[in-house]
Length: 462
Image (cartoon, rainbow, N blue to C red):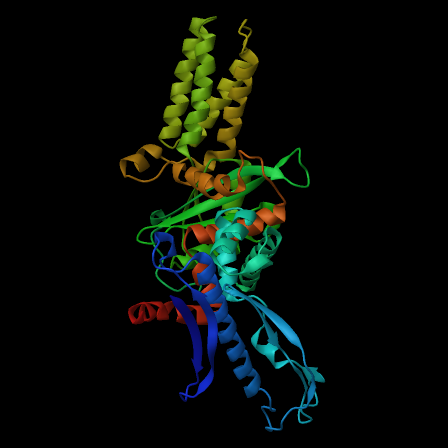
């Protein structure tokens, strides 16, 4: 059988703007693989429809701007020109003539191209969205291969182009954050939740540095959870973000919370995340994660058990003292726990026992005292929180690190990143993972939201 696909474009007054055949091919009906359109046939049909539609829309726009919009005088032509517009269904070359500005507009440039007023970018927002979404989930090269497989975009998609477009989207988003003021008109919109109802966890992960291959740099990611609201992710490279608080305010806003919302922040007590917690939300209650406290105590306990083979009496005394420090920490008495930990570290340093791991025990005891000293203000009554069903662990943000960092930045494969490139990718990846990337695009390009709303009607019509 012979298949013909024709395109007819009709104006608002029902007059036919253009029509014609865009594709013709023969199809058999006697084999399974011949039923329906193949990928190549479907891509050819989409490319033909897109080309005819974009060409007609550009011609209609040019016709409306052929005359001066102030006095109606027909504009003089400077000469023909051409421009290329990349879409999800092919790249279209369009005539883009230049005209002289009318004499009634003396302050304007001498010539202009009307089509540049329409095509402010030479890539369709839908294609930019697809490139950004998939490059946030998989590698740039795999994204290019995927789009080439399913869309008629030819050789215009490659890893470097997609990387550049993703960086452009992330930079645009950062520029939007830069324009936001902490005390803006929406700062107090909505009723703040109780502080305990909004939990934020932040943690860090390390990736290899492209410019300094022998060293890694830290990526900080976080997860915000509010009762009755969708979870939100965020991430940054600290050296690339001078005002991390603006990014966190955007997270709260995207959850429908006021930017002055008080929050409870859980961290592992590391120096970098502890400092960042205060910058993200200065009024936040900072809680150190119980798991990391217990992990340090467990490490100390293992060394003490080894010491028992050489000096059982001393080991038993140290074990009892560790239990008392743990009890104090569990019940929120950070000051007393610090006093006991410092005394323990001093006594361990004075030991003179033939224990092979004594140096490690001394180092662990000193590290425990330092850790408690740095985070004493963030020690809370974990027993009470546990009894009340409140969070005391950052396990949820540990999984966030794996989701955001490990599965895309491929720590096991030792992929290498620049700090700027990693920071920009984090912005689009976190928005892709929590489902807000499309919302970002519809805010920049409102017509995309109109198209989204038309999808159910188109489905019913089909």
